[in-house]
Length: 256
Image (cartoon, rainbow, N blue to C red):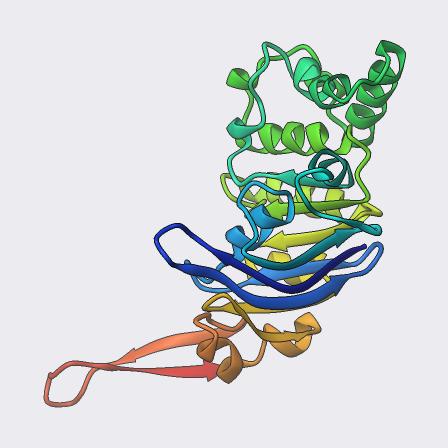
């Protein structure tokens, strides 16, 4: 469980990226964070694992409050899969990448091997074990990056744009994998149909604040709400009509 209370993040230039946000991600709950570019989604995720500092408010994971002393413990409880898999794959072979976290946190070599084997098998990527990330497709890299996080045995996993760089087949595979994970999940995404298939709850972020919070079918199909949140609802189609006088056109939203 992740509890976020009155969380505010302010960058050195004075930009308030996250503005007094509060919500709880229950055990096993999958939550999509959606919003326009610059809404604060990634800043929120990065603050949960101490990559960027919190100005005020609290973050608690399974009863442990985030602070400088508990940072390593928090990162064991909350794993983060970054938008670009190359940020997490830097060892000669995938097996080394997946082993890096458990080994770095002092697991015995026997436990490291057990975790690596179990994670690769669970994700169906044992065939990537001895390959270099330089030789992998976008989908394979994504699965390998997920493996590096799951090998740490976190209780929650946060994802930043997980469908980025994926072709349709890899995206479909990712959906199946995420739906099979028992972890609490926070997923920042622009892929709204993906969010609908994977998440039971959607939080719309606008200007660093929570703009809407509810079930995907209620939020993602609400044309007015989504438009006000800087997004386009699922099944909302934008049509362009040219004036009879040949002047500039105008747009209409239609929900089918």
